Image (cartoon, rainbow, N blue to C red; front, side, top):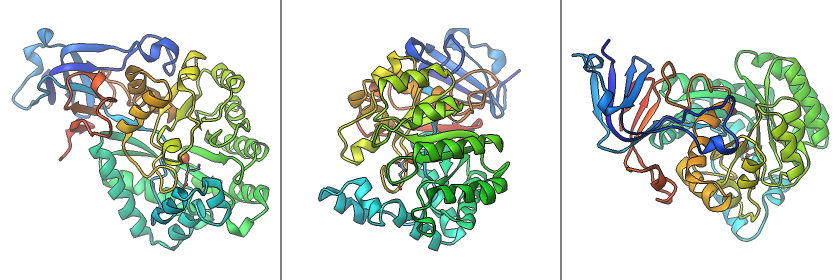
Amino acid sequence: MPCTLLIQNCGQLLTMRSAGSGPLRGSFLQDWELVGDAYLACTDDKIEAYGPMSSLSVSLIGPETQVLDAGGGVVMPGLVECHTHLVFAGNRAHEFQRKLRGESYLDILASGGGILSTVRATRAASEEELLAGALHQLEGFRRYGVTTLEAKSGYGLDRDTELRLVRVAREAGRQQAVRVVPTFLGAHVVPPEYKGRPADYLDFLVDEVLPELRGEAEFVDIFSEEGAFSVADSRHYLQRAKELGFQLKIHAEQLHDLGGSAMAAELGAVSVDHCDYLSAADAARVAAQARTVAVLLPLVPLFLRQQQYASGRQLIKQGVPVALSTDFNPGSCPSKNLWLAQSVACLNMGFTPREALAAVTINAAWAINRQHDCGSLEPGKRADVLVLNVRSYEELPYWLGENPVRQVIIGGQVQPE
Ligand code: NIG
Ligand code: FE
């Protein structure tokens, strides 16, 4: 049967397939499949077949087949961006100046700025403005080769605005090609209305907001940190979210080692995110839950001028499955460049280029429970594919800050440039 899209002359086809089950860990992070001088065939929105050019059967090509020549470039799965705060209003350029003068992230938050300043701007924005902003950001992500993206709420901190943020994320997913996976982060920080009463705020979220989100958001996330929510409160909240049928995520060990990551992993969280201050002992507890992915965010310590980066090398050695993401948001990472995140992961977290690629594709898919659908090039998965401008994957983290994407294919459709 002829296919609908044939990509030929792929100098290196990175399928990201690997032996072993579950998210890739240990040496499997390096061991994924690379096919030299290859083709990739897609039918409608799915991957059909791939193999060496020498085995390309003429029966795959018919009058309706669109043929794309990769010109010897690298071809790989679309990037999976598994941790973003996509929907917000305004920006925090003014706080960048404060930070450059030496104020810390938590000092700015404690003074009513930081996340709370974005909350004020977001509450004041209309649904149309928020949607326009999200669509603008998604367009930027698509140009960088992102084909699936997780989007958190968390700048509303009241019932109506939080529901609006989830609605906007879903609507943005419908209006353009990048697939959007919404997460509820109403437990981002304590809103002014509940100042000093974090447990009451979490009760309110469980009683009055989570029930409205069934079928709207798959994941429930919480920021477990000094100045946000304690580990004890986070545990109680996540447990109740789990009982309501949500899957769990956590922001933890970003600025202090409090124990949130191990706690959430033991509750069965799909991911524990940040992990810059995760101890080796707690990493072992995360590794024991073979399903939980540690999502590392290397652009965040860079942007916050923090010396401490998650110890990627150590986590990989301990058998923790790792993914990488930008954490795109107006406060701690105003960048959508997941290629730069890979470079910084290699430079400051001890990743190899091969490990970094697994961390932004198949393991990132595991971190948002989309492993059956995207993150690798396998027959039956969605045809989300990138044709790149480089001839070897080793160049990817090397060209610092460049965008290597030549063409983006989403669900079998070649996207406009
Ligand atoms: O993942 N750390 C908490 N939340 C976000 C930052 C949000 C913000 O500063 O606006 C993060 O880094
Ligand atoms: Fe985040």
